[in-house]
Image (cartoon, rainbow, N blue to C red; front, top):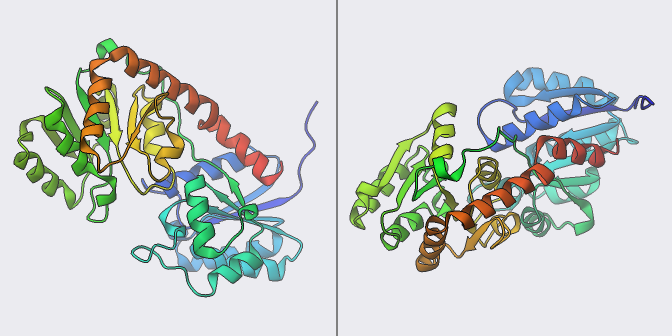
Length: 342
């Protein structure tokens, strides 16, 4: 029996849906999910359309929106405008990571934002409990205002079997900007002398790349550390297919989508017990979590996974099954339907 059409008009306004960033990819996934619904849907992205065109689109669309989805806290004034022109409408804000933590090094909470958020936003859809708790404290919100709405990844074809992978290769993928020190890539290099014959590949580009190369030389593992820079899709897929372990002990992370991508590609993971990493990874089940400052423990977990392919495979299988169940495209659409009440 055909489902009756939902005549609500949904408007999704965001910063951008183009490029390689995590929020951009999230926005593309939301837009694609909305396209599957039996609703009238309009989408506008500020950076993609240009500020002037975006403003005109927003002013045209807001009075028609029964449900307004906002993709970034910087667009919060549009929620207030929507409340004024469509008082019976509903407003949901998507929240991710550092942009809503109140971290003064990245984005301070503006004085007017907590009151505006409480008055104009009905629900905050946040990617993790860690980000929820940080945002609740920064903006003075109650837990009742939040709904957990995790990110997702696409599952590729069956991953490379363990026997075909290059043995004793640890992979990390990250931006290497000057502000990325809390990803603790240096800890991976410092752990490598304790893991005989292992190699480490750190994929990414940025100011830290040369610093990490110097550190590798200083601790005597320069010949075992590869820093190829940013890789295209095909080269990155090859890196995932040849590695045996994915490791990235980030201490501040809003969700940890890199771990989902590693699981989807058939890799066990090592992450930090702090931040959302400790929330996403089930320690001892689909990976290990460590204190990034504890180099011997990090080295021990790397060693265990490299020395025991059956353990690595079991964790990789558990992680991929969890992605399929909770963090795949279909799971994302199901969560989106539940969020908007479709």
